[in-house]
Amino acid sequence: MSFAPRPAVQPWKRANNARRLQIILAAIVPVLLTALVVMTSGLDANLATIVVFLPLQILAAGLVGFRAYGRRGIGDALLVVVTIFLSAFVLVMLLSVFFSVLSEGSRTMSLQFLSQNNVYISNTTSLEYGGVANAILGTLLIVGITTIVAVPLGIAMAVYLTQSQSKLRGLVRTVTQALSGLPSVVSGLFVLSIIVTFGFTKSGIFGSLALFPLMLPTVARVAEEALKLVPSDLRLAALALGAPNYKAFFQVILPAAKSGLITALLLGLARVIGETAPLILTVNTNNGTSWDPFNGPMETLPAYVYGYLSSSFTSAHQRAWGGGLVLLILVAVLFGSARYLGRAKSMKSKPTKQKASK
Amino acid sequence: MTSLTKASTLSSEDISVWFGQRQVLSDVNLTFPANKVTALIGPSGCGKSTFLRTLNRMHELIPSAGLSGSVFLDGEDIYGEDFDAVSVRIKIGMVFQKPNPFPTMSIKDNILSGLRLSGRKIGNAEELVETSLRRASIWNEVKDRLNDQAISLSGGQQQRLCIARSLAMDPEVLLMDEPCSALDPGSTRRIEETIKELSSSMTIVIVTHNMQQAQRVSDQTAFFLADDNTPGGVVEFGATEQIFNGPIDQRTNDYVNGHFG
Image (cartoon, rainbow over the protein chains, first blue to last red):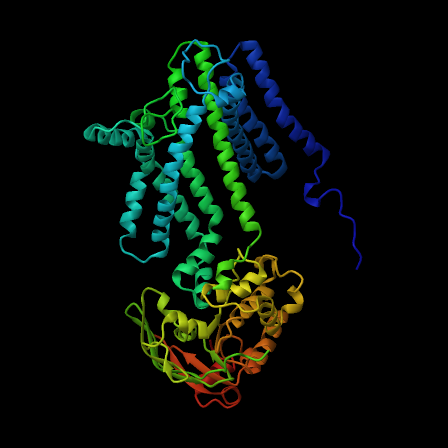
């Protein structure tokens, strides 16, 4: 047998010209008609998209589907139109948030904005002075401490929920789920009451404490799902080779669940990194740079944004946008690097050396 | 390579098994002599896989499992005080129905995983990998890609890799739970050849639904059956030749000739 060249057109994609024309018309006519209606009647364009364009588009697609396949064609056409319309709707909303933060925030963006702190800066100070370095530092330290504590504990909870046969699992799972609905301001309030009762000073570590009950349930639940996905075959295979439970877990189950566990870490981070209320309640704000989470107030990015938003001056608003953009970039960098590290390690399997020499 | 340890005789004495309050196996007494291949046959649900799992203490991993009786490895009770589950499983290897190589490890690391997981010394890794893969007759297919991920192999190759992984532990007994049920005839034939070669250095117990396979590879055969509402048990046990050509029990005769099950 000899190899034949791949045909240019797939048999299932062959459409006749009449059908093609119908599809093109169905895609263009509703848009044109809607544009016409908007221009002649002065109807609001956003409203017209929903009340004029969507029904017209559904009608047009339904007609094309009906001509091609009969009744079942209508259903297919409806599904296509509704899916694309809703996806586009969500995408436009997301992109417009992203775009406005990017365009507004980029005016403030400069090396000085990233490297200076907020001392002597008022709502009317020119954007050539001051920055968010102190807020970046505070956010990284406070969220970092929370992460270091909450992620191992969350994963440990997931291990307990998936690997043990304990009868308490149901209770733990229910409590975890209830905890994941905890409003962040309540968590902040609780820690604030500790601060007030015992006469502590608001400082970074209390912020970490307030974020902890928010991050833990998220990490635990996502990690539980990730561990559940590891086939029980693998655990049995490891045990049949004479592995003690802990080695089966660390050398076989954990590596197999790695990408899911990284997702748990990232979703946990995403849950807390933008939290504002608990941090304002427990950490307060600080225009200067503080490296010490155990001593005195610190600045955080969400608090920085909140602080400048409440002013009525343009330059203050621009600082708030800038802070928002920095927060977005920070999240992107954290997510990107976690994914990259996770992937780089699982691509090449490295032998564990200390086992070989033992 | 000759085996480091000699093959051992495995025997069960009055093994009965429960799941919850339901008894699924009753008084199984079988002996698996050293260097012999024993086939366990019988219809689905008669308890032969369950029995196999009692032989290397995998059975006890099921939370509702219950057991009475003893299993002797060269005269020592593996459920006795001198043994623990881990050391039993090191001596008695197991190959599962579905190929289950470790997906995060390379072919080479899969072979070495048994020693690493059980915390034993790896002397000459390169040599061990090659010998194990050769014994499972898969060396020629994978020798140039030892660092590839194990899941890049085909189903038949994965199963032979799993056999090689067990062989790297140099077990005295190898238990195989329908090792060919998910494989094509070519891979099945190669695994059967492997089983015959291995029997010179170890004791093998194989569960199979394939009558021809039982006849091809085994020296002795045990026929398991669970009648309605009774626990499963051994109906007849003897030389393979006898079980297939002159069974004493009518039910064995019906089963091996395909009249039921």
